[in-house]
Image (cartoon, rainbow, N blue to C red; front, side, top):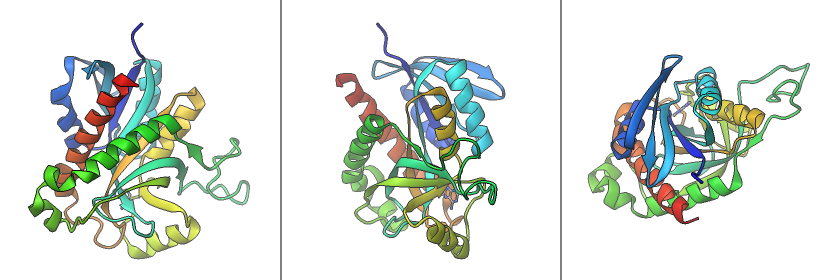
Length: 255
Ligand code: ADE
């Protein structure tokens, strides 16, 4: 029996580009302006695709992955702004729960609650997240060798860590210290902000599909958040994603 197809969803072109060369027997399928790349990696049937930016884009991508591409589990990779204490540029965050920080139908429903679902937080799949966190820790232990000393110095990356916990998503690039401080006050346990994860979480919850979200911290969601953004994705986040995904898929075969 073949194992169910794993979907790996990249938030950024550079990350998809870093994974595509290792896709065996590649084929493409175009639906709704998206290109789905199917094939195998380390013996697993996979589909690789760009998420698009923002909650609606990833919700559409995830729905198509489940309904048209028969994805059995979905992993989203990308970058995020660190808002938790000690979450630094160059660290990796593995989400255990996700929440939409811009969802606010108060006073009809509590702030952050997705109306009519009775919940604000959506949990990731534990086994999938555990496996990815293990792969991320192995990657962090080799960060110097993988990135080179010059990049570590350039991006002030020093002994990078893996964190796991709450990730907050919204249709905003958080780029002021004031906004990130306000988010940290409203969500004291939030580790990072990004723009897609909680939408993927809601779709996967509706369809009963396991999912996980792994983000490299590219900035501190403050006034400097946009500086070096593209270079960081190309030179750090894409390297981490490639190494983490390969390590995870190699391990997944023996699990
Ligand atoms: N992705 C990476 N950095 C981010 C930020 N500061 N806000 C939202 N999404 C991000």
